[in-house]
Image (cartoon, rainbow, N blue to C red; front, side, top):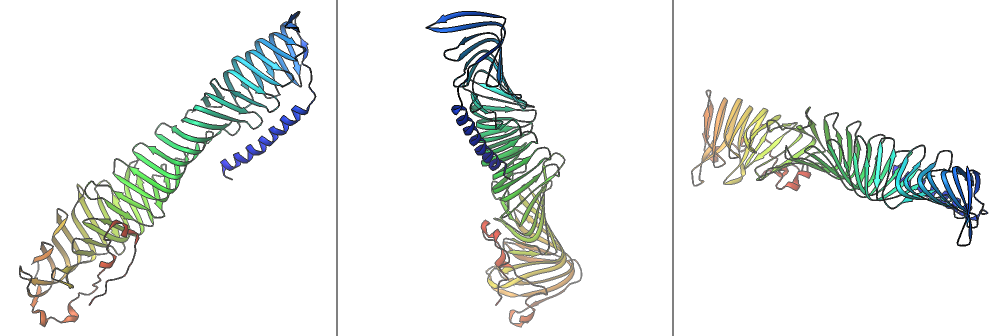
Length: 517
């Protein structure tokens, strides 16, 4: 059951019980305060009232409550008692009230104690300089500052209300809860001395050795070091930040979960992860996000936006992000680089991206595919790419959008300058088809070539020339003589319609291949 809902139900039934107690108490016949013992008795009068002054080892009894003190003044007509020195009133087998001075009305059953006041039960001790305790409702309160000590917890506030039947204390104004693990500061807080759970209401901060938590609603289980935070909730750990509509955190197991509008941020690695669910396992060395999950690799000029069904961050032994893993339908957008694949790994140490299972990559006018693609970056700029097995590069001809320049081989390495592809090294089973043109765009012919290895040089996003490393089989065809059925190399697949044109397109998957004319 939800702890807070349970607490509210408990409070409702408890409040009903208190009301019945108060009603029963008010309906009871008023009884006189009884003297049990005193060393001396001195009679006196004041304002027409007969006063009995008792000194030394004084004990009174009233409705099963026993009062002990050094001296007392009893007004029999008003059924009122003032006690002084080492005051102790035994309210029940488990509840005692101590102080320097006490005033007690036998008719209203209200106790007022001042000076070194302590209310002690078997779960907690409440300390203040002035307290009022109502025996009919069994509620104690203070308004001049006080604190409660419960196991390893100490709670301090300006005002407090202790419902002794429910074992609940309501604190208001500058509330501080301190224990060996955390310091809690709140405007309003309810604490159960039996369960040691604190329920927060209003702006609340929780400080740990490395953690900082904030929320405006929720609860903190001090005994088990667990918390549920809602309403503007977030937590930080070193340079990491986690926010969500609801956050659960278990310090003992170094684990947490967030629901609704979650945001994970690491300021050292400059990464933000968003979604609607996150699970954080510091002890296990990972965190993951799902449900519309997006990772942003921040760069002042051109950030990368990545979406997948599940995003997972792996941490090293220092709790710093080591790898970002994207699983199932991974798609990313950067102004000068876009891609999609089934799964992806980003390594924070060397800024490499490795794409697996049908990866497709787009840079300027080029589409790159292979079984595995690895992107090497430096200073937020792409240095090179390595395409492993069934490597294929396609680009639309600059002067005819229905024609495609193609490079195919077993493996390829692409080299970049200022994020533009300028050279491609093809290793094994190299094949090319490209349209050779004059500078003004007029057609010279169609070049078809095959070789074991070759190097392609690119200028202004078009193939400039090809250097063959082995004996090539190359032919330059007149456009009209080139067989139409051979315009596309084997395994050609154009995926341009799946290319994300803007960052929100990363949520769109498998639009379908662009129809070819």
